[in-house]
Image 1 (tube, helix red, strand yellow):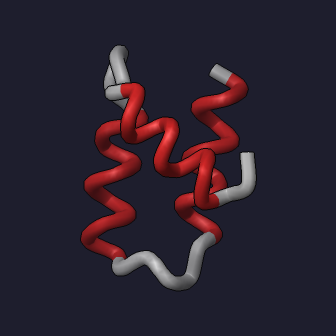
Image 2 (image 1 turned 45 degrees about the horizontal axis):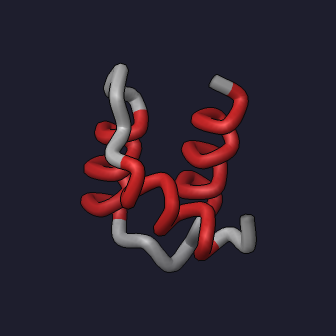
Image 3 (image 1 turned 90 degrees about the vertical axis):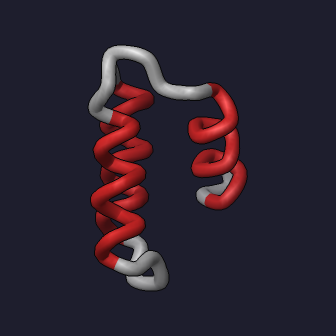
Length: 48
């Protein structure tokens, strides 16, 4: 859950992501199961 919160925070604070994309990504992150490629892509872009 902490990892998920960090990902959501990173998406929300990113000024380069369009609002519609943010909503879609956050929607994915709030699901019980999140695709590993989504998590990996976000973490690689936040330097994690």
